[in-house]
Image 1 (tube, rainbow, N blue to C red):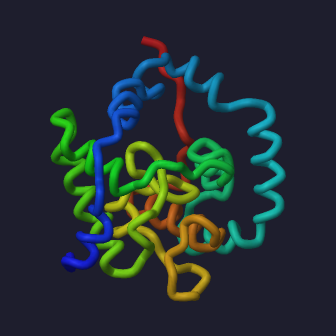
Image 2 (cartoon, rainbow, N blue to C red; image 1 turned 90 degrees about the horizontal axis):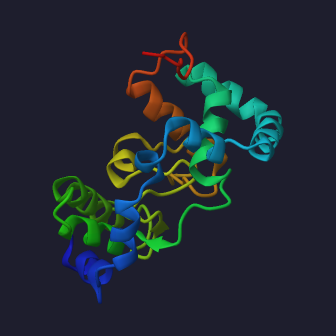
Length: 195
């Protein structure tokens, strides 16, 4: 990582207290599954998702042919992660990752993310002021820096892996990530088990 990138990215960095607060209160770990589901999956979100599934059907069909990930899941993940792109995050990713790397709870994981984002900035993928979630996730499907590094692809052929404004890139990158993580198109997302 070049000295120039480190200087630009880490200039005047300060820990973000709010990042630590949010890390301690993640709803995925504080709510029951059914409470989380009822808060996250609303009738309005389902309605918008169905509309976007139709609007993007041609692109999603091509991505399905290449990666084997069903369009409905790419739309559902998009809706769940960023409400279909309406909120991709406002936290400065570098500062959020510095904060979490310094915190002792999961410092090893976030140090790896911090080095990955610095390398991605150094390689010209985006600028040092890139915004994302409090945990450093970025773009429409909320990729962590190592996920972006390893799975983001340039599906529209413009030379940029743009997970913010290129639907071909964002959907194909999500499908690529799922496929390479062992996605099985013959299974659905889950089943309730009563013990």
